[in-house]
Image 1 (cartoon, rainbow, N blue to C red):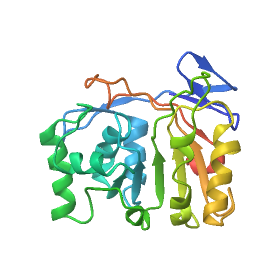
Image 2: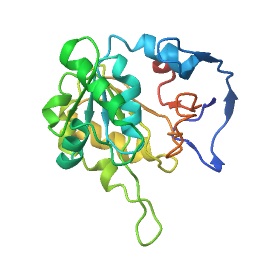
Image 3: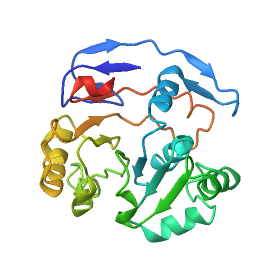
Image 4: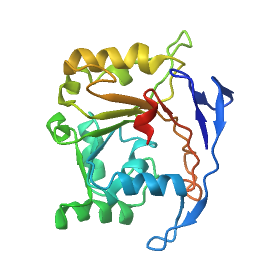
Length: 231
């Protein structure tokens, strides 16, 4: 993985911004699933087991991530009610998650409230969450500029943000977008102060649609605007 030290900079696809510090992450086998997971992600899972995670945006990036974090209690949220009902029925039109795996993680929350994944289009479902991962799409306009409407569209929903909460953006954005566009919305709607009451980070998604073999072994780079939060 590559950690970028400059705030507001991103690493995305073919281009990289900011100073870089390379970190070697060991790939390990996870016995209970037989799948591969990076050592960094496994450690992250351990630290997050007492957190309630919300994945916002249940597309081809968000849904596999939500399933990955189902070992910790969490919520998968999408404003599209039809999409949520489709997933609740065990069907994923993106074909990133097979029906049996989807039904399995959804059933966990029904039988064990300490783990599992709940899906909802109701903003109230986010009230108890304290770690938010935003994976909504960022299409481009007819002028070939990023369309931030999906990214900033939740707005009033961020009233659920509480002191100590963390928001991580995985949507593909341009350098500075997290601090310059996203954080002001979070502050305005929550009434909280960035880097004092709540914290933000950016972690570019590394999903290759349709590639099941390498999802769990995916190597992510991450930028935390307040470095100590990364620990």
